Image (cartoon, rainbow, N blue to C red; front, side, top):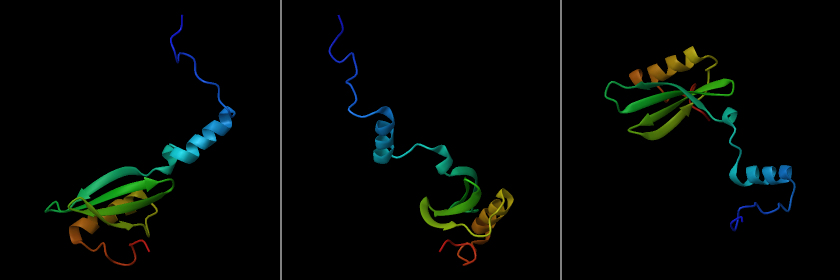
Length: 104
């Protein structure tokens, strides 16, 4: 004899509609839409952190000061090498506020 609740209740909508509604409510869990961390750079005093991230086909750098987000650098980064150079220089020389890199 089966216990109470051993059989799922019938759906009032088809599976595709149910799935679409679920995604609309809770969001899709699509890994392609999420940024992937590539590398991290720290200042000598460990107060500044620059994280290189890749999102789809572009790269960007996020700058943190003592763990708090400061800014996102997005311009002029077409390769991982360029993004890593910008991140390294951003924490070493603290020039990350220059307009040519900061997101508008």
